[in-house]
Image (cartoon, rainbow, N blue to C red):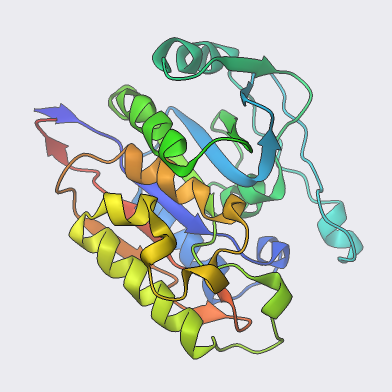
Length: 261
């Protein structure tokens, strides 16, 4: 029997969730308390796209404020977690399907820190980010996630941060979701629950996927998490709301029990 860290996907939504006391941020805090304490965290965020795949490899990653038009309080937010060059090196060793380049310029973007500041507010766990290769197909990202799976046996939490349904062009200032967005989110949830990763990777056949995923970047972090799962791992959903018309905040925790991988 081997102790395996859970794996986590979070729908991060509006950056204001980092500083607002709301249902989403409170649930993130509860999820963080429920998890075994990780030795380190690997985050795949929707907000770091590169030519090829990179991993942050600095000792002290800066907090990146990759947005505009928000209150000064959010622009002054800092998440001073350390980095881990050793973990970055371990990732380059594990991944064989692509060349992973060490990066010492990026840091932690809001896809990472807006969630982590709620889950682990002390910022006392090392964090590295893995970028999204903007030119790679969906299956590439799923397979790369599979190559990160051994980290779970090394005390590392793998976190994907994006949104399963994310269409800002159709967004409206409402707490509720459009019918098509709710239906698409529910269809994806059923596929996750059933372990049907093939359908989630070839997502074009999912109802309303064209509207839900006009750009892949918020969807791709999900594929890393699915790739790093073991077969038949239990899934627990949280923040299951679709809000702003066209943004799913759904997240889930998978695994986290002793098992034979």
